[in-house]
Length: 286
Image (cartoon, rainbow, N blue to C red; front, side):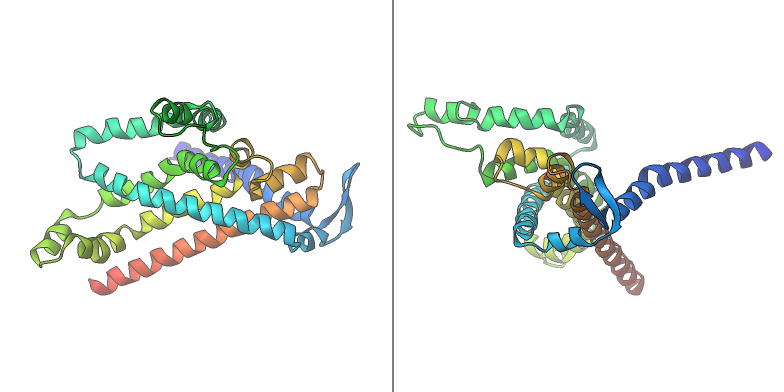
């Protein structure tokens, strides 16, 4: 009994220490750095200043933020538009086929995302696979410019983030009680009505979770915007990277990082509120 208690206390202490060192402490360092003055030589001066937060209100930085939100929203919508039918199809197929399909879906995770982004450059480049195919079939006479456009950035983000949408959607769809679908059909509901009135509300937790898992990380994938969109296609992640490594403005980089953390916390709060309302509705219905 004593051995079990010691093991439990050691595990709790280990997890708590891990969270403090790698979770809470970095955020506290960001908060502290964001309210200090910039120093080009020593990085920061230990004087209280809110200049970094004032700079975030500058129109140039607001444009980057709005642009990042737009690209993240488009990428999230595209992932949901493609991911939901795929997850639905995966949930309806025979169980012996689900595991192989899931393995195929997870195979890209075995390769670093930066390497995969370079692979996308080879596909979208002037002499890439798509242009070579279009030219060989005579569809176009000159190569189409895909790289260094918003389209290339969105395609790259979609390729990297689509598994993060499919997995929570599949988890929700797999748990869906098929008898409810049969009851909906027996009551005369068509496919559209069944999807809107039955499937959508019951899979809403997976939809919201997938959107959160795609939306926020998308804004931080600075190397995708750099490699596929060029220097002009900036995301918030590019801004953070430039402030820490190029401009050496650590207070502004920290303030921008906290902005992303705050956005993530807000979305998680929305997710918790949705889950709470769903639970209350199900309790009231029962």
